[in-house]
Image 1 (cartoon, rainbow, N blue to C red):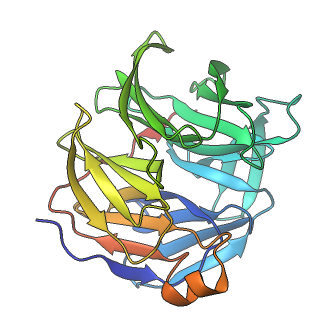
Image 2: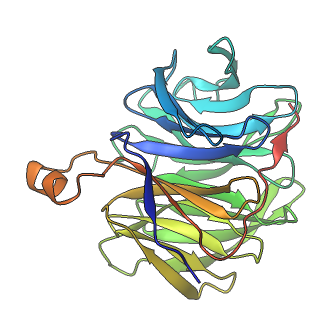
Length: 289
């Protein structure tokens, strides 16, 4: 049974994204993309803080050698939470000056999967990339609108990838690092919401944040909607399982482009929410690069 969502951090992010549970530090990390901030919530003390970043970060992953692998507008590199230093390693699109990175996760296959998009969301100039532990970066899908989710199944054999602009979630087979045999997992079919970021639970279901949809849907591997978690905010952006037993779902949100009336109706927009969904998640994979 899904519990009631509660406001965890009233941070009022412009565009909160990329939630990541760090069990070693008992910390939830996330970013506010346009504000160029990295946020953290301490799972022991319950305290939270946001600090300015040297780059515009969009996605995070745990790293075996320490720190975080971080996708940013400038490229992908290593971020040290102790010194707040970012070391740029890969620039995947030097010729696409109007693009920026977007969502990304470390997959069960050991790669860091991330996507790009036009900074305004216009056109299909985005792409999907696979970053291997040796820091080889390969463009695996071209002509993508707004890349989101980019989560693998528990065996690292399937990549779930949303194009939020097209309103579609795809499932790709991962074969030798390449993406094959795409199938549509679900579409918004003209509804007002768009599929955004996601997290996978231990039963193989995808929890997908619905931008402009006021909630998060639990979707099976067959594409059927198993449940919908209603939220008091219009624009949930992504989610991640965490907590000491991986039984809590953390959900980021946005207040970007909402007018005064909308913000009055949803004062917690841009906050981070937590809920016990009645099913556990998977511990985040760790990037070996």
